[in-house]
Image 1 (cartoon, rainbow, N blue to C red):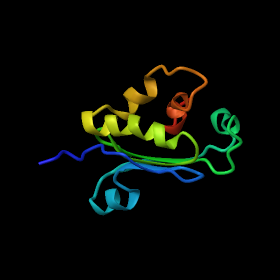
Image 2 (tube, helix red, strand yellow):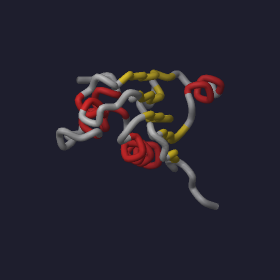
Image 3 (spheres, one colour):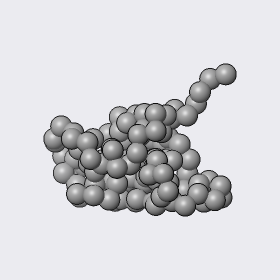
Length: 119
């Protein structure tokens, strides 16, 4: 049987849409204790460098285990970033581990630490 944990999806529209894992609603209905990190990222350097008019992220994190449960992106780069969150879900990489990693700058992935509530 295939293992679909962490399988990301993308819709290649303008702006791009991307998702992996569960939604906030699904996590709450399952009784998970979650932290939800929502960011309007239009004013971030990565979004401004592409003149984004829509740029947004939402990351759902299990508060007890610090595991990523879901991630959702709108805007340029989301179809690439979603794969990092898919790996985190599939292999149990925690939000803290993603946040504390060093990413090349300036890239969209350098924004991950900000998406998870840390500068």
